[in-house]
Image (cartoon, rainbow, N blue to C red; front, side, top):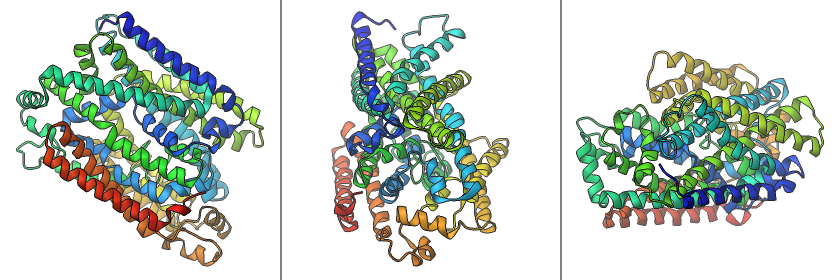
Length: 591
């Protein structure tokens, strides 16, 4: 794909602005570790929430969505849509609790919730496990996706694009992000996220419009897809067509996603009860109200604002490339479209959109991974009592280490398909999600519960992976075995001491019957009293997502009556959700 001077000008201007933001926030990030990793707890909800959305919008996401649509049709996206219920439960049950905990990372919560050597071990081990292994895998698949975009567009006609060329492209891409994210800390990351989200959305919308026009309109695109593949009409079904002779989405896979996956598994960006960089943004918010609003905006934008440009492009790719489903990685259909249809000037814009998505995620992964190494390992076990100058210096060094390990992981993962990497990580953490939710609302959970859950999920995954091929089945089996293991561990080990439980209860003030013995010993604590109402609000908020998502699709395809019905339902859910928030005590949701 040939880039003109106009295209290169757009690309250079984008990188210059991103670097400028990083340099602007360099001094502010150097004030303290809290400024470097959680922006001094001063972010407004709209900035923290948009940063969450941008972080989960990576270069891999459009490619993974393309792969899901190519293999299972539109309904294949229930792999990630199913997390919406867990996300809304995080909004209404957990966002305020995380802000009250006043932690820098989610791993730090371990020694607030538990005590003694098991808690210290769990905090240190989990910090290293996530920052060095899980984080490297995420950086790897995101960078691999960007590598594929470049190889199928800019370098598509370069025969020598292999081997060492891959390595130098990986190094160049990671260095671009590493410079500004290492300098600016989370301050620079969230502001570049805000810019990058707007650029990425605009670019993909423009490309989707061009693709549909190229195919002769929506109806012509649908007809072409149906003609290209047996049972091609299933591609456009929001829910799987189980009555079809050969369903693109088997019913058992759909049921696993819808009823098990959202609560059972730990997945970055969709952790049950919150975790990772989502907690980092919650902790960065001004107060509890901003934390809740930021997470609510993230969930709505994540599921209803972002997907349709990618979905339309996925349909267009199936219409344009009849052999797409037979490719080892059908996700490459997305960059193939860019190469085929993007006109001069728009090519630079689309590449910038991909770079924006890539950079917003990698910048967060670098900062987030380094926060574990510094806050939960170095400052906790190596140099307790370090001053802000030492911690800030170590934060930048840790960022470089995370970046380096991510580059190595990218090289090792360069032949992976992105959607399979997503499912692999979901299966790997199966069974742990329920622990992360219950530890806030059940006093009996202890450090050994989490340790056994973490170890059991790894062991069972290795065993089950040898005999079960599909990741969805692996996830369900590993989840069941892991839950049984940690339940047994919980009841055969001692509970946390009354002192530890009282300390956590007084600081976080969780409600519900699960803290009854502890609450009885602390009658002066004003705990949350509206657990049932909060769950109901989460259900109606989920209804907003599951009605708006198809409603937007009906508008795009001109199904006006269906659009009116679904969007009216979404509006009704929104009204009820706001009413429930007022009942909870909206005016009191302030730190």
